[in-house]
Length: 88
Picture (cartoon, rainbow, N blue to C red):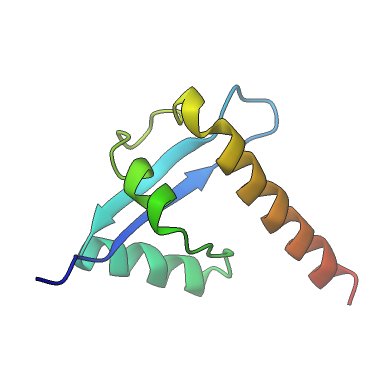
């Protein structure tokens, strides 16, 4: 049996305690999350294990402490990509 596609979206405000899950789901919901990100030119990072954990967090909640390190790396990567694109 094929696993259903999963996706999650995060938002981080620099003045907040931790990133929040703004959307999460699987199947058609995951497709819509990815489609919306692409339409809005939001960077997408594919990490199956992280997505699995994020889809277990309630939408609107901050990510759990255990995910701080990996999510910080994702945010740093996205910021680096954004900075490189802006410097072109």
